Image 1: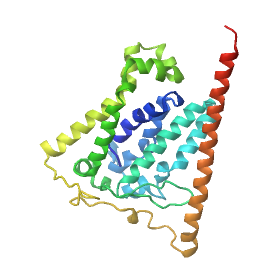
Image 2: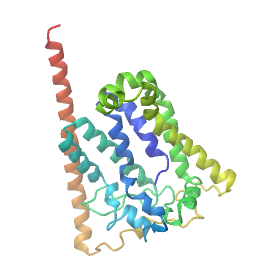
Image 3: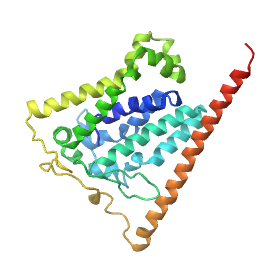
Image 4: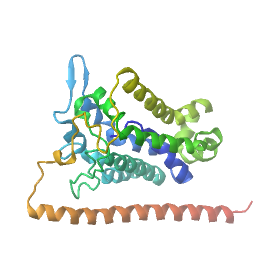
Length: 295
């Protein structure tokens, strides 16, 4: 899992896609896979009642479990619901891109994500840093900010800083606000300064979180750095081979899963390409109508 990247990714994506996306659904999509699941990885309690997954990694990333929220198909499904309700292609596409960015980023830890669910429950993992959610919030934080995880988040922060123009008032006025009905609605109730604070909030939250957790882990608690691949080795990491172990291992299912994954990928790619092409056609059509209109 990533502690800061999901806060910063939307700003980097915003820089590269500009008015082709809407920022609010992009940010919601970037948070979506963990919104209803990560609470139960560490446990959440009130009034003496605690709710926590018996097997956090299986619940968070596996199947059976809520791991389907970290699949590309989940983003497509929710995007279709958004479009069905609001008939806003840009909002739907933006959510899908944000969710996909989250799912892809989380492949970097030792558990990974079921990117191609439901076509396969295979976990795609690069194994760069330890997944240690089962150890609790603070040990997990200490491990994450002692291994390559904090380096990965640092890369996103630097990339975000290099994209600093997206945080300016001028960019917000010219590119972000006109392209998203949320800002028009919010602007009727809040001054522009408050809107800018909302827009910039996730970036500054992520930056402060990176500095604060890094300082806590090494100035206050003295966790040991270990930048080896898959580290830190001092924490009991969960591996992708330990998740979804109850899946069927018969030769028929094992042979079918890769084929289904390939077919599913083709379907998802075709859908994404068709959606993008439709957006481009509509944008060109509106531009031609504006040029043709008198005055």
